[in-house]
Image (cartoon, rainbow, N blue to C red; front, side, top):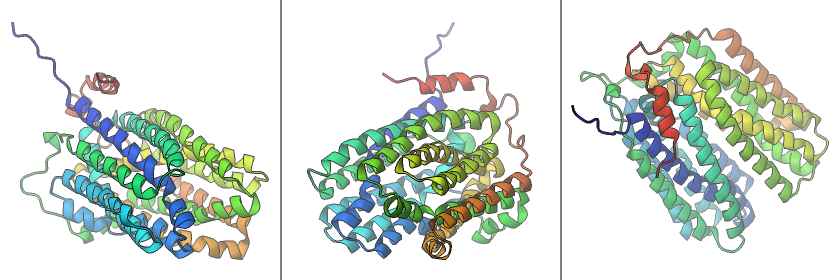
Length: 423
């Protein structure tokens, strides 16, 4: 009788490499991202326009998502993710030689734009390597590790930046980001994910036609657009309210950031299981309504301490949105069109993210700060209502047939093994 060899399942192997990627990416995020705006404004005296450009850059990149999706359809998605991450993070190494605002801002903006190339590819890869019934939980575990590493790194780097220059710290963080791209490249895509031999690459027109052909996704996409526009409209106004009205201190800002990070980690644990049980669309809807509660807090806040509740809500709600947006795309899209659907989502994100923050100050001058928060809340509620009443999603569509690779009885065991720490 042949002895059975002990092997690692493809799901477990993919999870292990994804986990290594998360830890390295968390170091990259924690050592650079929280401090970019502060360095630009405080050390390099960047103008308000330059700061706006840094904020808008990733959304500008998302405008080109249909083009990226067209280029990668019918091809392996992994190179698009790996090389865009490598180039984007590699650009930040050159911050070692920058000591004025415009080169700093342009490097950061170009890095953010380049990073968006990976988004449609990443969504497709997640669909291919994790089964539908486990994807929410496994992705939530990955993000818990990433957020935890980013939180620890930011605590250390924040103090190091008082002792040394960003020209030393940021390039080191960028190297860790490049290493994360390499570990992600080690994930093997299952053969079942390969496209047919005779595959016709879709045009940008066919991608945009999804909004006309798929009624459910059209309602979902525009509901998210309305919600997101309302949310981004007041993002620059939160800072004005904190500083000009409540006179927040740096310590209180740090306290809010820490609360949001901690509750985001807890949120990933909860939302991952909720998503696998209830589906992506209910997760999006509930998370959207929670974001609206942030505006309620700002509408009624009279002291800085009241904003701690907003930070807690933000950590919980945005962790749910991050997980559910990706999986909502997978709810609507066939496997062969995942990148196209995601590119539409990213393009609409680009439109609202480029326009909404610039309109926030205009709205503030018209109706005041608290009036702007009220307008934002109404838009968020309208977006939620559009999804609830407009989307007739078929939750059973795409469910794997019994005995298929995605419905094998060993999925729970695979998840358990994947989540175990490796020696």
